Amino acid sequence: MELDDFLRREIDLGSFASASYAIGSPAGLEREGAHGRAVSVPLRIAATTDTIYDCASITKPLVTGTLMLQAIAEKKIALDDEYRGFSFRELLTHTSGLRAWLPLYGYGGYDDYLLAIEKDGREAERGSRVMYSDLNFVLLYHALQELFGDYVRAARERIFAPLVLRDAYFHPPESLRPRIAATEWGQRFERVLRDSLKIPTPMPNYRQSLMWGETNDGNSFGAGGTCGNAGLFATARDVFRIAQGFVRGELVSRALVEEATRAHAGDRGLAWQLAGPGLSEHSFGHMGFTGTSVWIDGDRIMVLLTNRIHPCAAPIAMHRIRGEFHRDGVRQR
Image (cartoon, rainbow, N blue to C red; front, side):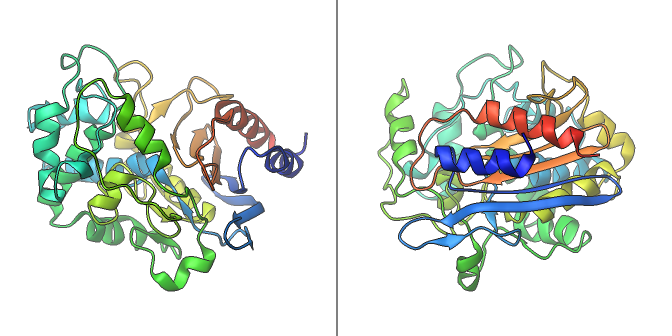
């Protein structure tokens, strides 16, 4: 099925409210498109290629991982140096043993995040296995705050500005709201997630209204917009440009690109996941809870942004959808 027809079919099936994509190679963007509604309720706003999406966890490799590699390149740190009891390698490869998630914003203010991780974060022995965890990148965020002074400013000066990005933000201004795709109505998913934890945690003050122009991730929202694990807002075009700049060696050396995208533990590189759905074993990329993904396979760079949790986070077959999107993207040569 042709790519645009496939995305329109998934929208009609209710898989997501809207989708925007960008496909190309390290040489440049070749194809982009958008379908569906960026906002379905309470207004109806059509998605375009200029729609800005809450990128969720693809923030991890695109921004946090890149800044960590830059810190390594500048010899501010070494990969096996330790921070808060874990090596940077363990945090970047999800082998720290920290649990997948905690409602850190329920423990008090932003200054209590580190104390909450120290108190309730550990679930397994360091280095025992790969356990994907937001907490790893919350710790990396705090490390970057210490290394560069301010994470958001570092992202702007070291990634967004050199790549001349037009629509990449951590705190999108209110004036851009008509161009931003809405996400969840109330923090229903994180409420369920917190209730499923096998340890007692504080009850957060959940948001009740539509999340539109503010990061869906509760921990990032509680930290003021990002905590290293999520918070990036961007168009598919700008996500493509960050991935393109990364693989071309514009942000870090090609040697560090190769180091970050080789297997360090299981299917994990440094902030990147390896062997994506529908792609080769040499591919690398990442996915985000809001329905986002960026993957690189050889000379193909593929970005898919959706707001699949708007207006609610219903279970859908995103793994299958991403696999079909990737297979079609690889054919777009």
